[in-house]
View: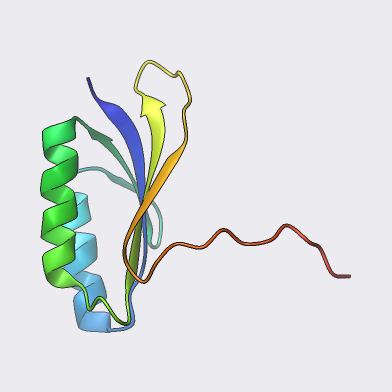
Length: 95
């Protein structure tokens, strides 16, 4: 079964960022400068993760994989990260 996965990245090097973008273009559609929507089955998801992991600097870069659920539209959110760990941000608004 294929799932909709958002791939979002924060890459500190222009050269690495270009390589990440090129790799992501092979799997999905760019929806923002550093965000791709990719319809992936489990094998393609693991292949993309491995490919991107080989391109990043684990101390400086971060790639998030946000699984939105099956392509059928049922939503179930899962967030995985490689590189810098993902931390949930507080929702406190300061005005």
